[in-house]
Length: 231
Image (cartoon, rainbow, N blue to C red; front, side):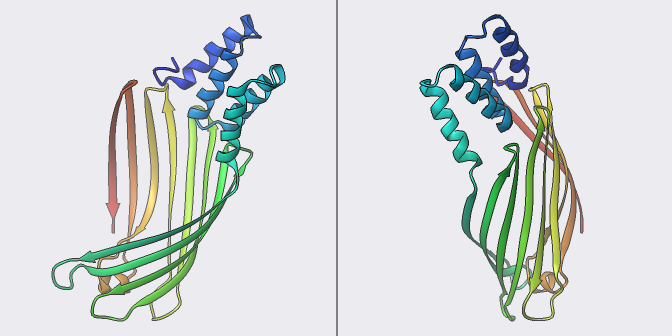
């Protein structure tokens, strides 16, 4: 089952095998890897710890536990984004730059919280440039093998000019449908900035979306998204 990417369905099978053969070390590391694929880091950590109690010299469990520690460790990031729209005339002509300095940390392994400081520099062609500062608070969490969620909120405060401050964000819920499909449902508010007029009007869009990822076989994926947008 795990070979065919049916990870949640494989976990009870491993449990049955361990009930019959509690000393089977392979049957302990395989469900840990399945839990890793499902994002259940807490269950993964418990499986490695139990296996290392049985065999402290198990190199596979030791290496996997080190990888888990790196994945869940606090992290710092620095990113620079440059977006340049050069349309016809002034209908879509703007240069946008954003610098991000972020920090993130795991909460109880299965949840991760991040805080990012932003600096925007936006320059519509032929008009003045604008600077803004703000932050994004984001969270991503796994509740079970069949349910996970994520949410983020960004505030943007202009330090020059007479532009309105902006708040955007996103929330998404994902359901694992028996390992054959993942269904996501969510809402997202986005900036829609293509020129100086859109910038001065604080142009935003509200989006409702549903996305679907089908995995009918190990080597096949089919993805689709349906989105409704209101300006």
